[in-house]
Image (cartoon, rainbow, N blue to C red; front, side):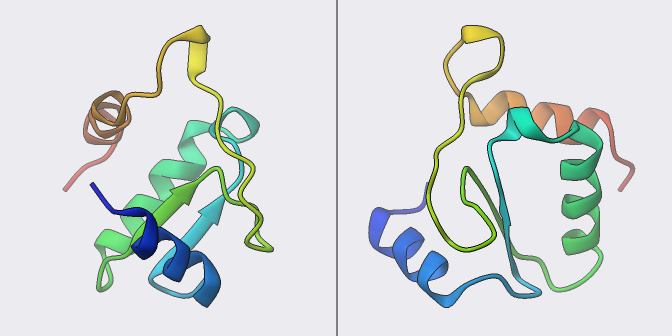
Length: 84
């Protein structure tokens, strides 16, 4: 888990080859997320911040299906839909 100060610093520095902002996950197809993860995995790695607009404005992300946001579910979806 990343602390608030680190997140604030990442957002302040803006998007780069190692930091990608994505608006609310509900606003884009999961395949977009999978493509970003694979691209970063095939380079030097990085961070994808979901709930942050391209301009750095934090808008948050609504949980899917009314349930709590669960990073393990996101990780499982990525694992199950990508090939190492």
